[in-house]
Each structure stands twice: as C-alpha cells, then as structure tokens.
Image (cartoon, rainbow, N blue to C red; front, top):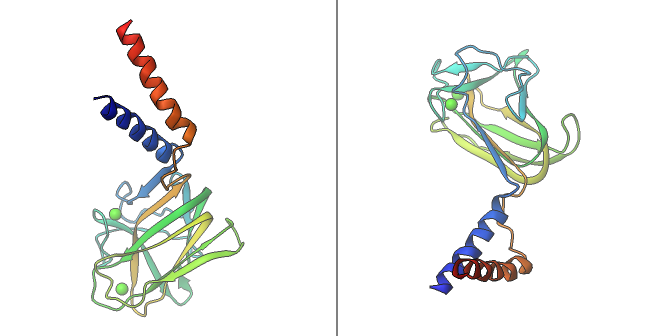
Length: 200
Ligand SMILES: [Ca+2]
Ligand SMILES: [Ca+2]
C-alpha cells in the first residue's frame, strides 16, 4: 500500500518535470476562409510571408488538398510569380518544427525545408528534402534543434504546386528531464507528513 503511494508520488513528480516548460502549437489553417491572404499576419507565435506577398488559403480547390480538414496554404512557383520561399518567422526561438506538404496527387512534387538561427539572415541550422513523390498523401519534414527563429519551405516540383498543412512548433523543454535526487528524497517526506496529519 505504502509502496504504491510512493510510486505514484514519484511518477507525478517526473511528469511535472517533463512538461513544466514545454509548449506546442499546431496551425491547421481550418480557422481561415478560402482565398484569405495570411501574408504577414501574426498567427500566434509565427508569421508566414513570401516574396510575392501571397500566403493564400486553399479550401479544397485545384487539387491542392490538405493534411487536416479541407484547408492548406497554396505554394506555387512560376517564373516571376514565385512564392518561394514560404517563410515561417517565429516570435521566439523554437526547438522543433514540423510541416506537412502535398496535394491531391497527379504530378511529381518535391520540396525542401530549411531552418535558421535568425528571423532575417543568420546561419542555416539544417535542411531536409522530401525527394520526389506524387504529392498525396501529404508528407511531413521536421527539424529538432535548439534556436530556430525562421524556417523556409521551397517547392521544387515542375508542375502546378503544393499546399502546406499543418505546421507544428515547440518551445521549451520537450524531452523528459531526470527528476533531481532532492525531489525524490522530498517525496517520501511529504508522504509521511500527510500521513501524520491524517492520523493526528
Ligand atoms: Ca488543414
Ligand atoms: Ca503538384
């Protein structure tokens, strides 16, 4: 009985330690309306821009498809009318970012995803490439590295374009943190104190 209670105390202390400073945000673009331009809008921790100034919501049209619900942001690159790169600028540094991309299928697509240590300029913290696929289902590319302040997605296919949906990013501690020895020593003391109060 006592052992069970002690285990419960230790487990809850560990859970608190691993989640205390972590914050995760996912943007699925379902809250916006078809054709809405999100360029430069603060979406809550992140702002999306591109050279053309068009970060347009596609609600299940032109085969762009989606990863969640029916909405994504369309990414097209055609000569001067290029939205490459699609730029995700974070208010504060994140240590994980994941982006899904794809479309309704029907042609070959590919894209790259790079992260940087500054909102403008700075140094690359890594780049990953999707390789060629038909665009459906949507595929995720991600980075797990400290100090990400900007991510850039570049569609590199040859026809039409793709959609981006969903975007997830995290700040703070995301990995379980070992519980300090002092916390484990304190837990039984608190347990006995509670027992003493109860029996008094
Ligand atoms: Ca969506
Ligand atoms: Ca395509």
